[in-house]
Length: 540
Image (cartoon, rainbow, N blue to C red; front, side):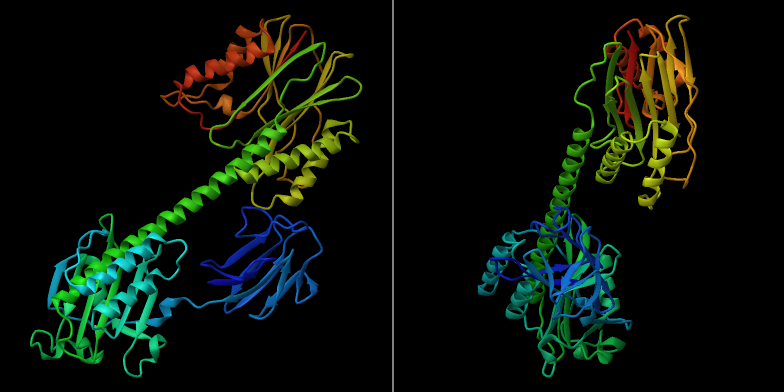
């Protein structure tokens, strides 16, 4: 666990705990620790726990991070080292997991009393004054999210109402192992909770498997228990253990024992522990729901960022070119898409169009699209040849794409003064051309692999096409071709070309509408499995 002490400007010092091996710090809202100061990079640095030390790695675009007043890009941090980021000061350390405080014995235990445990509920009826303490615990549960010591508070109640000397609350982790959230040892010479507590693994296993509470009231005096090896080996006189249950499943245990006083625990005490176990289970579930809510909010925030990026780089309107009628549309199969299209109107009247498909979805793909768009706009200022432009773009992306992602793309430039279209492809769906003079359609594939995969790959422009009045050129992504009928058959090029030919007499917007309508009819109105982008260009 990484523990950070954060002191922000004009704010009180606070302690943050992260049950993770690394913590991301920066100005971005998606960082684990957000410092929204001017001059702080979106992702400034990452703190990594290695054994009992913290390592800091600078990952921002600035010159480094201040550690104890020195500019560094990498450092091993001690508990007293100060990390300056913006106007905030951080100290970092590694905290040992609490479950080291509990040892499990493989020796079997025997139990005398066993009773079912109700589902986690707040409706615990008090029967004497001791149960009044439960009201305090309920109050704490209602404030979960601001109180990090709910399990310690439950142990307070346990030790006040039940004559136990040792106890703990354990919660099952995602790996199925018991994680100790709070423990206490008040035996004579017990170290006040610092020493390890040894309990029978068999006893815990029985509770967790059966879902029933167990009680060992006076083990050494009971002829049914006196022969059990664990009773003597662990010196257990009296012990009780209850499962924490929620939604019909065991999610942890609450345990208490007394090795000094035989006969100290009764079924009344077991009932108290049952009630406390119910309260603890409610606390666990509320914490889980809070974590899920926070994760959902973080995910929704990421989607908002991604959608905002996409809205920024998709064209808001078609370019005004007297000799061309242009219309584009893009439909995402989920909240954020991986498709992109754009127009570039040159000073001499030429028009370039690009359609691209980035692998994956979400913020990462949206940011990659933004990178492609910015790089293209810069390269088009200095590079006329489309093949060399893609060569440069491929090399730029290849230096950054290390996680297996890539981009397919198709780009064409219309020169209506010459009546031609030049185009180049990078592993993308072919351009489709409808020739008005013949009424025929053809597929024209670009030459080159996807961008970002093969270093120094060569890309060549296809042979220049002559375009005439009435011709329709269709740029698209594979979501159109791969739209699936309920019986599993793909829409395919043949149906697409037939739809294009039938709609070619209409405007570019009508062509796109006809194709999108045909795809929806083909899929039976079911959602697409991939993003679908179309740009139709009709020669006037």
